[in-house]
Length: 87
Image (cartoon, rainbow, N blue to C red; front, side, top):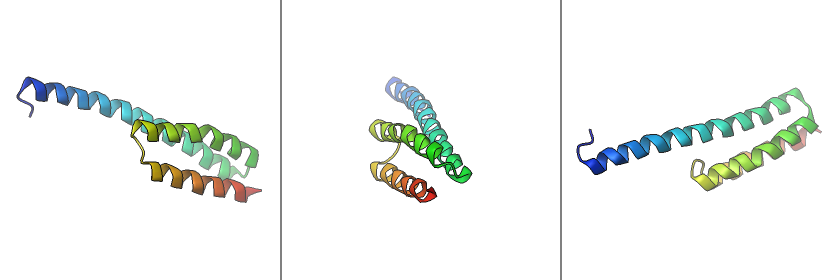
């Protein structure tokens, strides 16, 4: 448990940062899920559009420190390969 004023403030800051990061992760997952749904439906045009919308969100997660750079690159690579394979 936080005792000093500084540790209490850090605990508050950590909680606030956790909430922001949680929302960012959720938003990224939503965009990725839309790509997955478009791939499973077999509609390449919709999948390409969803992938183009998901890429900036994923890269923004990298910039904000929510997702590791290599993880984002791996996800984009695998998704784009699956979208390309539809046609």
